[in-house]
Image 1 (cartoon, one colour):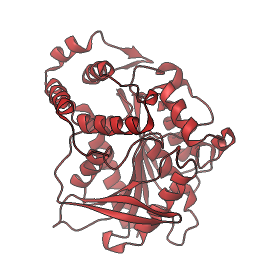
Image 2 (cartoon, rainbow, N blue to C red; image 1 turned 90 degrees about the vertical axis):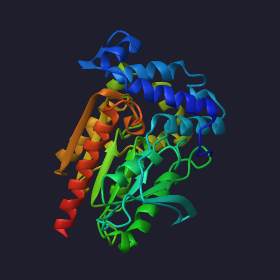
Image 3 (cartoon, rainbow, N blue to C red; image 1 turned 180 degrees about the vertical axis):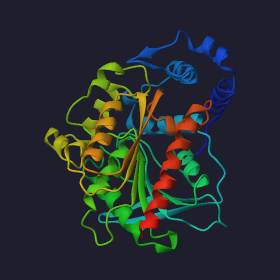
Length: 350
C-alpha cells in the first residue's frame, strides 16, 4: 500500500483543508441546507466535507476490485487526516499463533517517561484499512499522551475470514503485555471493526495469567452483526458509512451466517462481566450509533465503569478526519483525555 498521495489527491487534500478553515457561514453556503435527523443537527463542516466526498469519483469503494478499494480507503484517510509530529515511529513484526503480522510503534516524546501501552486496531470492516489508514489517529494518541501506541495490522477478509482477525488481535495484545519496558498498564483501542476487536480482546483474555486489558477505548464500534439496529434505517446512505458497505463487510468477514451470533463477532450478545473500564465514543449520524450506545449500556449494567461520548453532529470515522475543520480533533481529544484518565486510574490500582 502506498503511504503517499499522488498529485491529484494532494490537490484535493489542500482544497479540503482550506475549506475547513473557512468561517461557518461560508461553509454553510457550500454545505447547503442544514440537515436534522432524530433531533440531531449535522455539523456544518461535516456536511460540507460529505458533499465534497460524495462528489469524488469512485467513492463507493465496495463496488471496486478489492485491491483498489483498499488503496482508496488508505488514500481517503491520508486526505482527511492530519498527522501530528511524534518522536518515534518504528515498524515491528508481532508474533501470532499462525505466524506474524505487521505492527507500528509510536511514541510522542522520546524523552518522556512511558506510562503504559495501547494496542490499536484499525477500522475498515475487517476487509479494508491498514497501518496507513490509521496513522494519523495513532500519531494523535501518541502526541497527546505518554503512552506507547502499537498499531496492529491484523489479517483481513475475505482472504482471512472470521475468526482470523480475532486471533491476531488477541495475540497482539498478549505480545504487548510481554513488553514491560513499555509499562505494565496496557489498554486496547480501535475504531469501527477495530473497536469490535478491542471489545472481543477484553472478553477473550479474562482468564489470562496477566489478565485482560486495563482499559478499553472504543470508537463507534461494531457490536452486533446479527441484526440491524434503528440507526441503520435513519442513516442508511449519504453519511459516509452506508448500510450497503456494512453488508459488504459482513459478507466478507462472516460468510457463514451462523457465526454472526458468536460473541466474538457480536460482543453485544456476550456477557461483559469483569471487563475493564471503558470509554465508548459514537457518532450521531452513523448506522452503528445505536449498537454502540447499547454496548455502553450493557457494560454499565454489568457494573463496568463506562463513559459514553455521543458526538451528535458527526459521522462515522471522525477520528480519521482531523484535517477537516475543528470538530473531529475536539472529539478525538475528549476521548484521549478519557483514555489518559483511565490509564492513570489503572496505574493507581496497581
